[in-house]
Amino acid sequence: MGMRFVFYNETTGEIYSVRNFKSHAQAEANCRANRRFGMTCAKESEIGFVANPNTSVVNVSVTPHVIESKTITPPAFCHELRTHRNMRLSKSDWTQGADSPLTDAKKAEWATYRQALRDMVCEDYNNWSEVTWPAKPS
Image 1 (cartoon, one colour):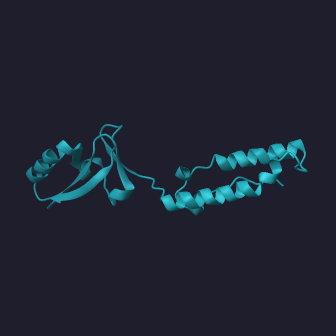
Image 2 (image 1 turned 90 degrees about the horizontal axis):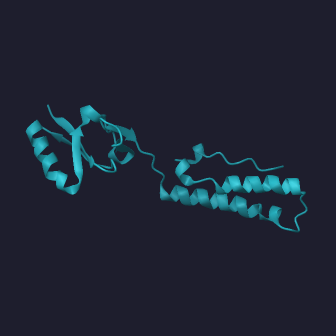
């Protein structure tokens, strides 16, 4: 029966591949050959199962190293989130003008809302179901 080995960057924990080997000697030879590229390898049974190398990472800051889920934020989602956020900011620009009909207290509420929008970063979210927009002042 084969053994699965995880090949990863020993500094970042980024997984390059997961390979199956028939013998321990064959796996060790591959591990040695890949060390010159900054890669290390470990038995999957010792660090954790890798269902998908694109969504997993090796936590190299703990000993022994362990597999963890990696949060991936697609660039397209980040762009969309920023676009929606910027639209909300744009629609509330009028609240901060010197000629705004709002009281100073209401302007402050809107300024707080606008700052909350600016503080939203796409790295905090993976998809739209996770996004909670700040409450717009009444």
